[in-house]
Image (cartoon, rainbow, N blue to C red; front, side, top):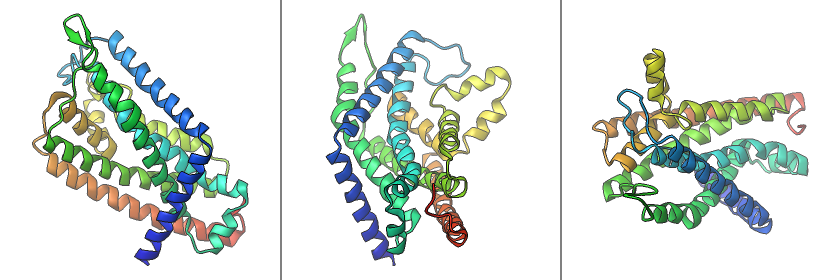
Length: 287
């Protein structure tokens, strides 16, 4: 069963990558989207040069704070959007019935699209975005560089890779859960987008969560840190920007890893149940 699932997943990834390569405009669009994201937040960090937030860890490093957040979420945002749209897209092509009759689950379909999108985005990041970030770390304006160099050691590199793996599992689970909305409600694009937007915002992507303290909402800040992506992004920023490895990093990784795996398993079970219900009602192929 495991070997068959792996084979289906591999075939699905290769299929999606071939389609993306055939329609190369998608690569150009994704590259432009990445560039706009990074440049926009870079200038935002330049304008907002300082912060008055109490105990703000990244004071003086707001540009780097934003850039690391952009790079982190770029990996998962595109994969999420492609993942939640794969079922309606396959239905529009008339291929969903063929896929289902060949005993390929909707979870396999989503995981394949999510994986291929992650690969595509990661390659784009490594070839285009990260070299530009590295170059900006050497270009000086006055006494400082445009961007402070990120802290990269072997230990930080390994921990960062582990954090990205855990985040990937969590976001795949979230994508499968959000995709059940497509199966239930059909035209649920705006709802799935809102789901992603809220999760991104609560992770501290747009603003440091420490700002909540100024509104007397420090308890709410701690609640947000229960979300794996929030915790993972905070740890990633601490290591890459400040060079500080959290003392409880192993505890953070293990707990968030368990949460992510449990969510993924529950998401698979939920999708299987919703798929079976939609098949019985005869609405599984209509979107």
